[in-house]
Length: 341
Image 1 (cartoon, rainbow, N blue to C red):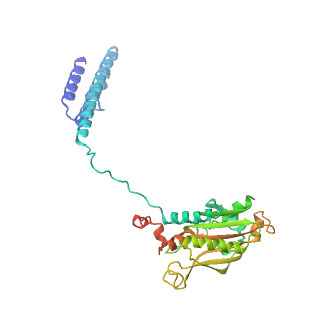
Image 2 (cartoon, rainbow, N blue to C red):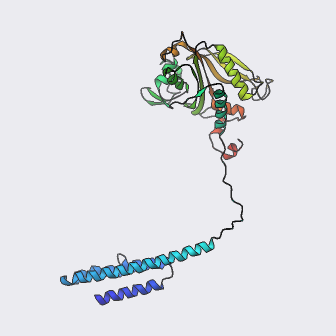
Image 3 (cartoon, rainbow, N blue to C red):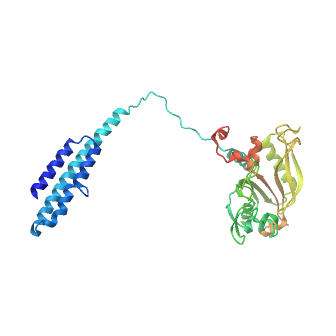
């Protein structure tokens, strides 16, 4: 047995020394130390050895295995050193070559428009406030004077998360206004930008997920004249100093009186063009005086405080300001489109 082990070790050491690549070294390892290797076969034949000789034979086998594993590892490291040296010699770097500039990203049109709107209102003394996108029915509808039988609560228009109709994906950022009013910290001057969700079909002007910017002012002696002056200033800052505004009567459950606001077409100056469809005016937002019932539900005395609210679609502003004719372009992440901004 001792002579057999010596013969196996000598043969293995000879093959290891003559090996010239890592693959050959792995073959030698399997040939001698693998499950069917020569040294493993010796261990399997231990049953034929006399019981009193087995410890000695086992020790010899372990010593032979340790010797082979040590030599294999030494040879492997030698191959790795040679491979690294060859790689370093092959990968010469010409430091005189110009460096590659990383591709720079571009701000999204929505981001540019939002920053512009926030700049305008922060300059007017407003605070930017955020709120949850997953909302209770109370904050999204009930506290905004929208009763259970109102069409806006139809499941075809609203994404409900928990039945029966208690938790939903907010359909408007007006819910943030309710949270702020409930805090009782008056006066309030805030805008609430954020993502909203409605069950709309995707087309050039609609999406099931889009962004709104809601504004709210609550204070003593606030009138509709304050609302008109604020939105007129906003329109001039956003679309140009010569921009005019026009208010048309409308209805919103949470404001009374309510109005929709048009701005004079900044493309043609009100003369009529493709952008304004020949009318000279472009609709941009809805607004109104906060309904007394909405104030009461949030714990504010409508006899002492009044306020106004308005809401504008962020995508609407981006489409108009940058003359984009299809809302879907804003969501496709086409770099050819985004690079223009």
